[in-house]
Length: 405
Ligand code: PLP
Image (cartoon, rainbow, N blue to C red; front, top):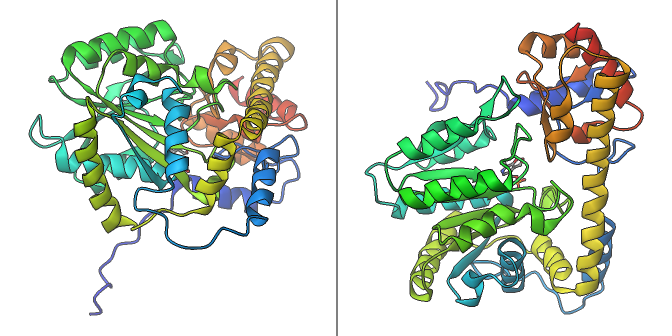
């Protein structure tokens, strides 16, 4: 037999499958609520005006060439990106103990962080990672790929369609000391449920007392609340508390640079000397994986972060996206709770944050929405708020109303 004939057929990615089914549907009012990318009110991808401007600047720059970037990436990009997430006055930056490496967007940052843990995190025997239940599905695969076993911690409470705060705290307390916990910095995917600042403080206290390691994934800074600093609050609080951590950063959503694959991994260490050694090992890993990260997206983001005028324009563009999403939350809740008087409580739609909302709809209701309503969503009841717009939100509300009754 030929060498690959025994390779089993893998199932298609569930989101990809959803998009394919949506595209094949000829119904006029069909709606795609699976997509994890921003859409404007006309259901179109949105190139941020500030990105258009930065692209033009790059096009006119005769000094640019296509040489390799350094192994750890474009320095102007990584240092500005570190300030963006950690804060311009962060002690971790001032004391020169932050290691920043440019990565293949947030996915690459998660991978490099996971790979680094698998090589160098040697506290508890074979390494494990605690992941929120549920989490971004890719987290499981990314950690398994490098031999780290994912373990669930309680996060989402279906009874309240909110945070299982006590379950979360108990899991932190019951885990052996120096465990590694993955935390969504803001706009938790897939639930849209974030801890409050008071809850974050309590979480940080237990993590600190137990000596746990915080593996932050930050894919939605600014996109969640519309405010870059507010969305970085948890990460900065943990740094202030002296909790050992790293942060995976993506510019896919907040800069609309999905396909450019621009991101970074920032590891905050205790001192400059440790940072130097960590960075040397990160470089070795990066070299064998991708040699050098891609230049274009990093140049765009670097221009935006390092120019006061462009930075202000970016913040305005971010607010445009966040406000449209919040407007859709308000409208969907209003239609369900007030106009259609759909059975149940729909406050969570407005309370949740970021790209996604966990509606609380069950598998059967999701199936009916798709099969009878031509509304595409994942079977766990997650909807992408970006798929809603002023023309389809009423139709979606009416269909939800129909399957709930
Ligand atoms: N982490 C989370 C929680 C996400 O939701 C995503 C994207 O959906 C990512 C990381 C990584 O995205 P990207 O690799 O496009 O930056």
